[in-house]
Length: 320
Image 1 (cartoon, rainbow, N blue to C red):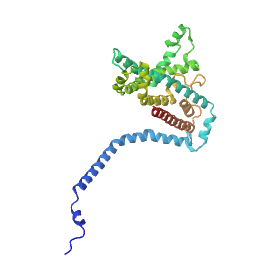
Image 2: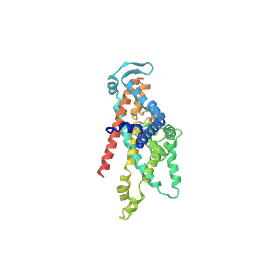
Image 3: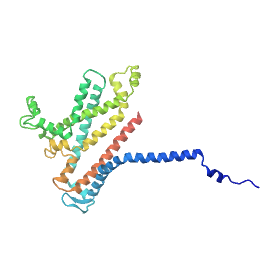
Image 4: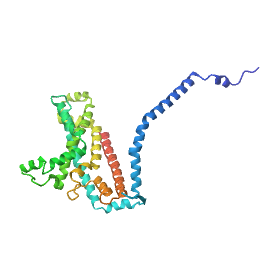
C-alpha cells in the first residue's frame, strides 16, 4: 500500500507551540491596545471639544454672514475677508502687533537667560532669588495688568510722581497717555510677569547640559564669554527655540494687558490684532463673521511664523 502523499491533515490536528504563543501574544497586544485607547479617550474627547470643534465653528463662521444677535444668515464668502481690508485700523494693528512682538521677545529672551545663569548654581540667597523671580508668574495676566494700571495711575500710583521728581513727565499726565509710554509701560509689565517663567525653562535647559562638557572645556582655558557663546548657547538651542516660539505666539495674541491698560489707546495707537477681532465682534460692527475671518487669517499667520522659526533654528543647528 502506498504511503500517504500529504501530512497536512496530521499537522492540522495539533498546532505548533510557536503558533499558540503567537496567537496569545496577538490577543494580549489587542487587549493592551484597547486599554491604551481607553486611557487616551478622555484626553482625545477634550481635545476635540475644546480645540478642534471651536476651530471648525470659527471656519464656518468665517464663511457665513453671522451677526452677533441674529446668528447665521447664509454664505458670505469672500466678502468677510475682503471687507477686512477696508478697515483702516487693520494695517495699524498689524504693524503695532509686530512691533510689540519684536520688542518683547528681544528684551525677554536675554533677561530670562541672564536670570537663569544668575541663579543656576547653588549659592547663598539663590533659593530666595528664584522664589522672588517666580512669584510674578503665579499672577494671571489680567491681575498683573490691574496692578500695573494702579501703579501707572497719576492719582494713586507712585511711578508718575517718582518720574516727576526726577524731572520727567508727571503731575496729572499718565504714563499710558502717550503711544510710546503705553507701549513701554506694557512691555515692562510683560517682562515682569513672564521673566520668571521663561527663566525656569532656561534653567531646565541649562541643567540638561552635561557637566563633563564644561570640565573638558576648562582644559583649554576659555573665558566666561567664550564658554557662553561656544558651549552654552549652542547646547541650549532647543530650549531657546521653545521659549522664543512661546514668546512670539503669546505676543501676537496679546489682548488682556492692552485691553486693561490702554483699551487700544491713545488714538488706537496700541490696537492689537486680537483687540481688533474683539472690536469687530462685540463693539463696532457686531459682525462675528468678519471677526472669525480675521481670526482664521491670524491662525494661518501663527502657523507660518512658527514653521519659519523652527526651520531657521533647525538650519542653524545643522550648520553647527
